[in-house]
Length: 266
Image (cartoon, one colour):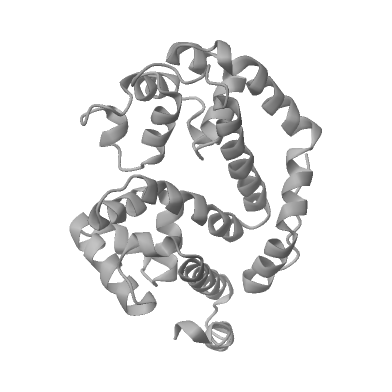
């Protein structure tokens, strides 16, 4: 399996990754081990007509979950079957009650509990595999540098939140319930680890107030704008590098050097 190359950390590493992204992703998805799984999915998925059949096939389920960043749930078959069979049409469906909207996207994509399985649609395999390739490349990047994975993940996850068409407060709750998204925003906005223990409505208000102060907007939809999103990523990487390099003796000078690399945000 091809392993992404990230020779540097922080902003320098991000710039290198961005400049080599097309070539590195192509090498990753063309690797033999990866193609075995994607070819199997493409050849087999149209014959899957029930949630039970999907969760019973570990190889198919691995691709299905991987397309939505839910790889760690591979062993939770009963839970996943309930998510899929419940669909998203009913307000009280399990997928809709979970704070992490990735489960709702997963259930909606496969359709078992909505209008019926979408697995036989001619474009379905391509739809899922495109997401799978993106998410698995991000995961491979994360094995080298997890901050880079979360930065790469940002665009797709924000697009999913925006696609829901919900109000701004609901969008913030979606951000807060999605661990990768939350980590980026929480780190970039300078919230401490204990921040997640306070009242959920207070958290939402704090996210909005700090986003307005730092980025000039409290609208989650605005972070889909490439320039605003890049500012968010840069600040996230800077603060992550400060946290990684801080020490009683060097932390102050390291922080000053790193913060000076993103003057547009201060």
